[in-house]
Length: 135
Image (cartoon, rainbow, N blue to C red):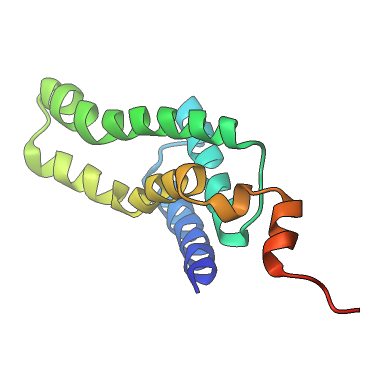
């Protein structure tokens, strides 16, 4: 059931992101932040399919960087940068509202990197847990 929820979220988020980029963007800018979001979406793919992608150490490092990105997107941008540029709170709220659907990406990244021992266990251990095979 959880696999289907993460897979459905991934599909819906990709549709939403495509719509936002098509309607709000002034061009096809692709930044390092976008590349990092794609990498984080890859963790959602691994979570939805219950498969290893890269290594656990890589995902734990990515989750630490993801935490920094979360702080940047939800604290630094609205309170320091946007407000410092004189943007009104209402406009900042609208900008942040468009970012709300990305919140589960951070949660999924954390779950994939830190709370999914079944995914990261060796295949030999998984076979032993399943019990002896009947021949």
